[in-house]
Length: 437
View (cartoon, rainbow, N blue to C red):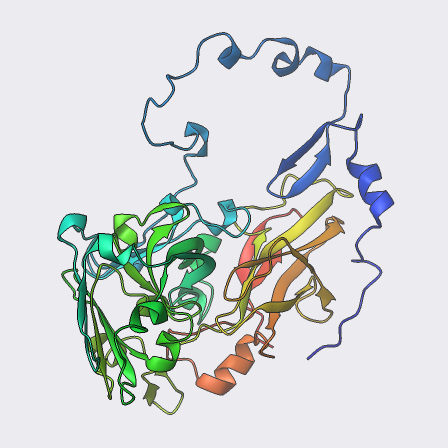
């Protein structure tokens, strides 16, 4: 591991220099794609129609209040959408994954309409009045709950990410997409509302030999996964709310399982049954799929927590620096996360890993949640190779590509968390690049 140091050519400017470069008349800052640049008044700008003419939208009434009954984004944000690619679909759009636009997101909460979606048989529409959750197996008191009865339990709200274990697989062997959304968009983060599963089980009399729980969905694929009892009694939740409203149908309405920090596939949607047993079930999705292939050709079929990870979201191919001028002050920002705990440190490199600089953590720093990081530099119009490397409080460090290959080989597509590189040209164009060492 390279020792952290600061190169005088890439050192961030001090606070006074930052404000000197960005302040104008104490208010005229524009921020676009994390780029800070002052608006300068010139003789020609005084004739700018956007300044001297009344804006067209101010000359007429706006849309009727509640015209759409459910708030919609501005029509100018038409590119802020999830995307699907045929390479990630099973010949149709029923079994596929839609990628979240990470480059468009602020903070650590993904809007419900942009939350990434993995489906094995399309989006199921469940009638909440006919919803039933059967809880049975090694219990003294098996139980069937309606949605209304489930919601009578005391609820909690927590912020956690959900990530597909195949996230990052599209660029694992080599850059396939110059596109952050397709490189790392199989994840999102939300505030979830529901009841801790251990609260429900407390009154049902869990048998001592109950070591596993089967969670089964009611969709056409009947997704089913075996969950160890330790996780069930730790932080597992039955959730019905997402970001202050009921779950969307594509997120498992009316109830899904939430296993914070663990593989997205384990967070079973459209939940219908929980069964307790002394042994796992070896379902299709934990034997032929969602296994961790090793370099010796054998696979681990129970490999649950998502590894420590990070990605720079600005700049990225969708958010280039091509509009910058030499000397502009800019912010490098991104996301870090870990299914094993809380992000402790994020380092960035501007030179492909020769030197590492500690970034600042921004906003809330929560366990098994996204964490924002930031570092401010002065653009020198020189080529850069940007990397980010996260470390969590369990001591795990995001590995290089070579280190990950050394540990697990190259064949598998799951649980790939190597350091991701963006090459920035001297013109500010951004491309995905592999930095293997």
